[in-house]
View 1 (tube, rainbow over the protein chains, first blue to last red):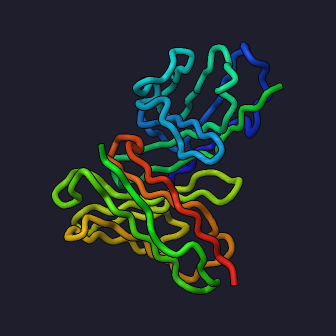
View 2 (spheres, each protein chain N blue to C red):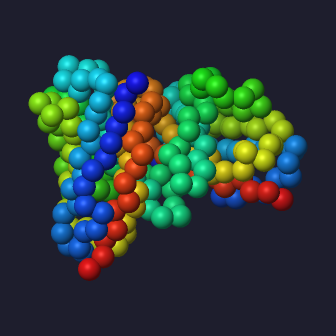
Length: 109
Length: 119
């Protein structure tokens, strides 16, 4: 079964700095990878799909890259509202699965 | 705009069966290309995909829960359901129902419902 491993578990960043989050898949997912942001008490919000395409309404400071087994989410200049937990997710065609990584918490330094 | 709404008991006793239903509005389950899935999140922990079911009844589950999970669809009520047997405290979580399409991320989420497993 597909396993997604995110690193680091926690990232401490000052406002205005860049944050780089990683997601590694146990087998190739091509570009079938998404990133979500989750804040306390809320359902996850889709940021990136297709490894690098921003979802509707997502600011340009969020960018995704990678393919195969290695992926990165970059937040170019952290704003106060960006401090949250971020999850990567693969979506496979066959068998249909939608597995998540364990999450990276981005906290204020 | 599709809306998903979970319903079911908020408290389940250990060893019993957790049963949840998701009602779908503004879109028919029957004949649609979507899978209808469940994702859970234990308090303070990460997201875990449980499984998904197609309107035909074909279902796919995560390996670790496969022996305890059953998902089904009721097209006449435009609902789909989750049953999880032999629950323990580790099954305490917020359970989200979702709409899914193969090779696409989750596009709709329910608001989530907290289920606590406790005697």
